[in-house]
Length: 488
Image 1: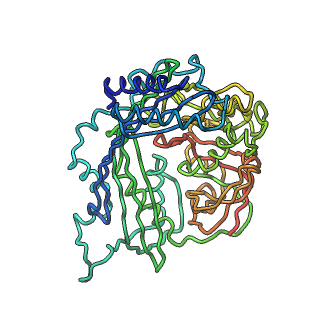
Image 2: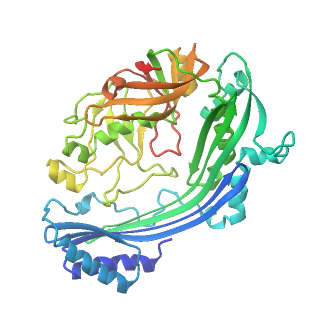
Image 3: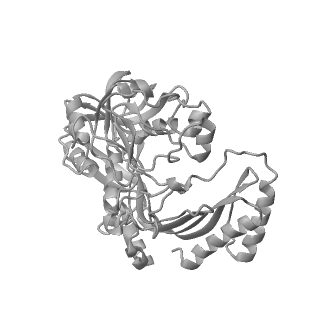
C-alpha cells in the first residue's frame, strides 16, 4: 500500500522537523483499509468501507518532547503543522530522558514489510459479492432459511429447532473446540430451543506502516487480516443464552467462517439449564479461548511503566523464581505467517525471541528507551509481541486430555466481568463453564465467582496445554490449576 512516493514523503517530514528546530524526530506513517459485511438473522444488515492514512511524529526539541499526528498528508499542510508542533514542544517542561533508541538496537531487516509472509494477495481479488457470500454462508440462520421458511404456524418469529444436549452435542463441541472428538458424556436430555437472534460480521483488511527516525532507522510492516465473528442468542424454557465464536487469519484460505456459526450455536445450547455449583475449592481448567485473562496481568505487571510507578505485584521480580518450575512464557515475535507477528516495536526496536518467564524465573521487564532512563535499567522491547505459554508437563495436551488428567472440577469457558488489583495481584472474575467428573463434562455452570491471587494461583499450576489458537494475539493454551476458590 505504501508507495515509494509516500516513503519519500516521510523522509521529507523528518527533514522539515530538523529545519524547524528539532534535534531529533521519529515519523510513523500508517495506512489501513477495511471492508466489512454485517449480517442480522441471516440477512445482510450493514456494509462498510473504511480507509485511513495518518502520520505520527515524535519530536525531540531542546531537551523537550512532544508527540503529534495528522491525516493531512500534503507538503504544504505538513510544513505548517510541523512548525506549530515544534513551537508547542518548546513550551513543555524539559525531559532529558526522552531520547531515540540506540540505532544498534533497532530493526534493520524489515525492508519490504512482508518478510513474515503476512500479506495475502488474494485480498486484492475479493469482490463485494465475495464478502457478502462469505458472511451469508457462515450464518446458521441463512443456511436454515435455505431449507425452511422463516414463519412457523403462520406467525413470524424465531425459528424453532430441536437439539440434543447430551453426548452427541458435547462431542460435536469437542471437535469444534479442540479439533478432536471429545469423549464427554452427560445424561441425555432433549431441550427445545429457539434461535432468537444471530449477529455476524465478516471483514477483510490490510495494514501497512513504516517507522523512520533521524538516526537512520527505517523499518516497515505489512499485514492482511480476514476475520469473522458471530453471536447467537437462543431461548429455552423462558431463559436466554448467548454464544460467541470468532476466527481470524492473515490468509483468506485459512479462515473457517462457517465453523464459527456452528461453534457459537453449540456454546449457546451448551448453557441450557446452567446453574451455580456449590461454593468451594475445585480444580479449575481454563479453556484456551479465555486463558489469556490469567496471563495478561503478568505481562502488564512486567511493564516498565508499572514497575516505575510501583503499580505492579511483580516489583523487584527480575531474576527471581516467583512462579512454579512448570511455567515458561516465551516471546515469539517472528513466527512466519501468523497474525500479529512483527519485526519491531513502535520505536523501531528489533523484536527478538526471548524468555519472559523461564522455569518459573522472571527473565525480563518490558522497558522502552524512556523507561530505561527512569529506572536506570537496560532497555528491552516495549511490550511482549507474541507471548506463548509453553506446554507442561508434557507436549501435545489439549483441553480434553487435561480434563482427563484433572479428573473433576470446573471447566471455565468464559469470564463475564470482574476485576484484578495490579498492585496486590488479587482478582475476582465472574465465570461460566461446566462441571466435569472423571474427565467428562457433566453439566453447565454459571453465576459463579472465581477469586484468588495470581501468584497463589500460578503456584498451583497443574498443566499447560499445547492447543493455543494461532488467531489470538497471545498464544495461551488450556491451563489447569489446583484448589481454586469458586463461590456461587
